[in-house]
Image (spheres, rainbow, N blue to C red):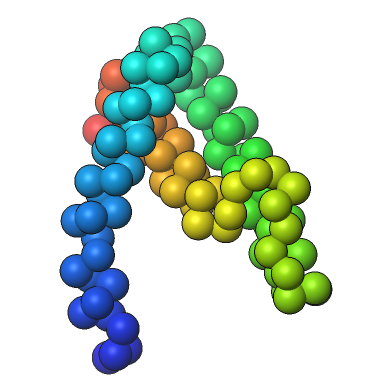
Length: 102
């Protein structure tokens, strides 16, 4: 077993707590717009996740090629992954709202 696994498992509740707070704050800021538009909300979520995936790809490729972490987007690899996790959670909530996948 990976020696870091226990440490990582202990960190999960803290990460969930942080993610929950960010989601609630952004949902309040954007007035729940992630859920507007019925099934189009799911398409919008897909585009947001795709944007984050492309950004993550760029950031990681740049790191591998140069050994440097670019700040061209004003967010780190961790920030991008956290945003992606948030969009995935919103996507699940949209599916639940639409009655999809249960």
